[in-house]
Amino acid sequence: MAENTPKKPNVLVFFTDQQRWDTTGVHGNPLDLTPNFDRVAKRGTHFANAITCNPVCGPARSSMQTGTYPTQTGCFRNSIPLDEEATTLAKCFKKGGYETGYIGKWHLGGGNLVNKKALDPVPEEKRGGYDYWLASDLLEFTSDAYDTILFNNDNEPVKLPGYRVDALTDAAIRYIDTQKDNPFFLFLSFLEPHHQNHRDDYPGPHGHESKYVSKWLPPDLAALGGTSHQHLPGYCAMIKRLDEAFGRVLDALRSLHLLDDTIILFTSDHGSHFKTRNSEYKRSCHESSVHIPAAARGPGFDGGGEIRELVSLVDFAPSLLDAAGLEIPSEMVGKSVMPLTKGDNSNWPDSAFIQISEEQVGRAIRTSRWKYSVVAEGIDGREEAGADTYTEEFLYDLKADPYELENLVGEEAYEELRECLRERLLRSIRGIEGRDVTIKPSAERESHYARNLTQKELDEVAIENCTVRGFG
Image (cartoon, rainbow, N blue to C red):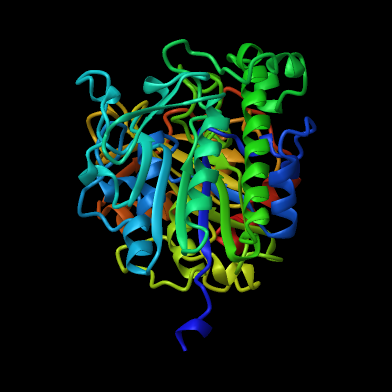
C-alpha cells in the first residue's frame, strides 16, 4: 500500500527582492526581461494584482514566512528577529513530511550594522525552522555582486563562485538534486534586484547594464525621474539574469523529471520607486513600491489563468500549504488562493491592506480602482508599529491614473469616496491590529493638481460611490 501512495508535490519559492510588477512582459514591459516568468504566468496562474503587505524587506519577509501581517509577527521594521515560536512555512512543511531548505537572503535574524550582527551567521534557533541552511541575514552586507558569502548549517562561511544570482541558483540546483527522491520545500531568496547598499548602486552582470541605457521608462519614472536614469540599466540587467536563473531552475526540475510534480511560486517582497516618492527606494503606498510580480505553476496552479482579484503577500503561505494538501494553521490570517484558481471568487476580499513603516507610520487600502493612504504625523516609523491618529495623505484613481501622478485627496468632489474608503481602512486596522484609531481629513482642500470636474464626471463619481460602496 505504501508503494502506491502518491508522492507529495515538491514546493519551491523563487523570491526576488525589490522587483516592480511592471518589469515583466505580461505587464507590458517591452524589454523582454522576463520570458520565463511570462511563460509560467500564461500557462500556470498569474496573480496580476499581487500586493505586498509592507514595502520593507524584513516586515514583508516575516509575512511571507507566516501568513500574517508585520504588526502580528512583531517584525514591523527591519532588524527585528522573527519570533522563534512563530508558526512558519518551514515548520508546517516539516510537519507534513517535507525536507525543508533555505538559500539566500533571510533578513529575519535581527542583524543590523549598529550591533555588527549583520555580518554574523544566523543562529539555528532564528532560522524559522528550516533544516538545510545556506543563507545570510543581510546578504547585501556579507556579499557583493561577484563576492557571494553565505553561512551553512554549522555557521561556517561559504564563498560561492560566479555572479551572485548564478551562485545562489547553482546552490539551489545542487540541493534539488540531492532531494530528488524526497518531497522538499525550498525557499530560494535572492538579493537582486535590490541595490548594493554600501555603494548605492544596482550592479548587474558585468557588461550587461549597457543594453538597457536610454531604453523604456515606466511612466511614473519618466515623469518623476528620481535615480531611474542612473540605476535602471543595472536594475534591468539584474532582472534579466534573475529570469534566466528561473529558467535554469525549471530546466533542472525538468531534467530530473520533477517539473510536473513541483509547485513553483515566483514573487517578490516589494518594488522600487527609485527615490521618486521619498528619499529612498520603497516605503511608500505607491504601486511602484507595493505592486509585485507573482505567478505559479505546478499541481493546483496549471491552467489557473490570469487572476485579477487583489492578492496579498500574506496569502501566499496558506496558498502553498493548501496546494500541497497540508493543513492551514489557524494563526495564518491570509487566505488560500486555490479557490481563485478554480474560478471561485465568492468569498474573496475586494481590497488589500498595506502597512508602511520606517520612513513613516502609514496605512493604505487598495481596491481594484482606488488607492487611499494615511500617515501618522510626527511618529517615528522605526520606533512605533502603529499610531492612534492618522491624517489622509493620498487618494489615487488607478483607472484614470495608474502611475499615481495626480493626488486627489484634497478634492471636494471625492469627499464621499474618501469617507467610504476611510471606513474600510478603519475596519482593516481594527481587525488586523486590534486598534481603534482616528483618521483626520486632509488639511488641503485642493490638491497640487486640482482641476475642475465636469458635471458628468461629478455624476459618475457620485453614482459609483453610492451604488457600489466598495469602489471597485
